[in-house]
Image 1 (cartoon, rainbow, N blue to C red):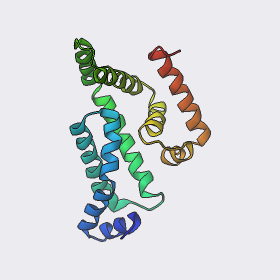
Image 2 (image 1 turned 90 degrees about the vertical axis):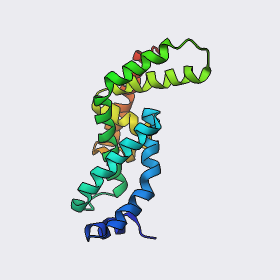
Image 3 (image 1 turned 30 degrees about the horizontal axis):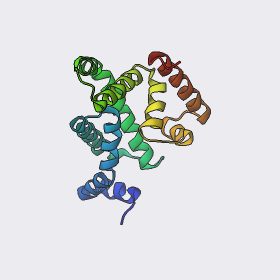
Image 4 (image 1 turned 45 degrees about the horizontal axis):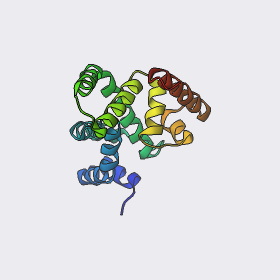
Length: 174
């Protein structure tokens, strides 16, 4: 079985089927990443499709200076940040709809808390939001975050700490 490096090299040499194998290898993790953020299966699949479309266009120029997984995380993160920016008003409307439902169902309550959290995360400054997404949605270590973002581990920790303090304030957990 070929590794990511070999599949990308084959793709760069004109083997289109190698890109399909690369997509199959990373699709479920990519969809899962977006599902953690959106809690919407269709939106998660659409965002994953956007990521792989971007990769299809850009992998011809991939220079192998970092691992493909790092490149994929960056693409996921940029796509998530764009989604947050594009969909703020839609998310607020959805939160209002959940709030107006008259039910004691715990799953709705849990959904509300999750939506409230991701709405608060979407309002964080970009660096803080990126670090929080990678820590929460992907479970990356600070070292892995530093590789993906290009910031130092210390800077990643500081951004995460500041983000948590902001989130605690916004969500009234102080």
